[in-house]
Image 1 (tube, helix red, strand yellow):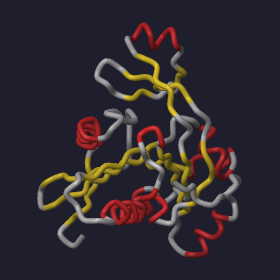
Image 2 (image 1 turned 90 degrees about the horizontal axis):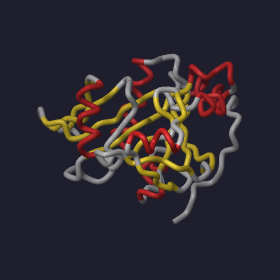
Image 3 (image 1 turned 45 degrees about the vertical axis):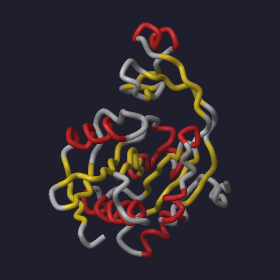
Length: 206
């Protein structure tokens, strides 16, 4: 990994990369912070953090009074030109950078989509905690073949509204849910780990 560099990048650059390379071809409208993985001056990977679409997701971790301490690892993609373990290395370094850029954040959640063939193996490699599977849901595919969440800009999109937009329904399996407790030291991480309200489980198996 010594030839790679991680840099803060603008949301516009991160979104353009994700729309081109990520299987969803879409992302949160205001991700922040965003980190780029560079080989010399070539952008070969992006990790973006964002506020989760649902406040219930954030509240489920520590409780409603601590929603501002929770963020989502929203999108991750690295080109298939990197050696094994690059993704887990990239995630770990970005979590360290998040502590600097957003010191109030104590938990990062992320979701792995089995419908797209993702079980969260990379998250497991970074010692993320697993807390179960969400229910099945209806998403949408827009005219540009982008996967659209049923909640957009803080508003639930009805089936009728989606039809008017020209979006098609797509059924998705429940997503695997992971979290990382982050902090400046072991005592800080232990304190917040003890505040976790969701039940932590063994990793799902193939």
